[in-house]
Length: 191
Image (tube, rainbow, N blue to C red; front, side):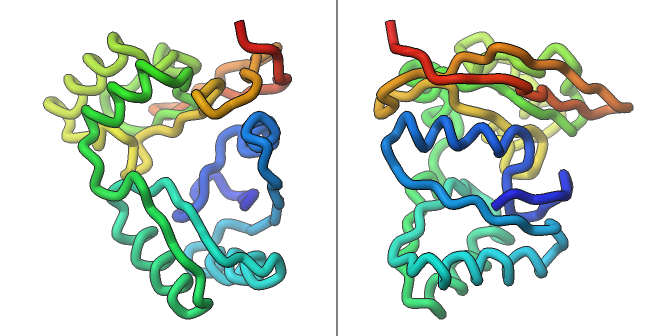
């Protein structure tokens, strides 16, 4: 879902257009659909896409958001869609450790106390986990960003046939929040 609102309650916003590269690297079909990102109304947009594409199984990445989990579970049940949420209530430290070991993921937006512009575009690695642990201790942020504290983007993963290379990006900072905007990216062979 491509939301025209950066304040979407349900859908990822930063750099969503570049998820087409992730889908290509995974060898899966991807369907883009628009939503204005208005609370609750965006669910009707998702429902239409699921019906129009005869979706039988839905995999989501929510970890702790009851708001998202309850709404997706309810919709899936109503539409007789199998809903799989492999990260639901996963231990944040374990997930981050796996992410830093096996994936190349970067932070693409921040919007919570304790974050600053230096986080934008930074890789989620061991050093970042230590910073996130401190932010969790000090500000009680969810280390997996489930409360909207931040967003991330995967550039490489074990199942990717190629990796995503960012060719051009910029940082936007306004007040106490910011976004790492990927302007150009392409798939490249893995080393």
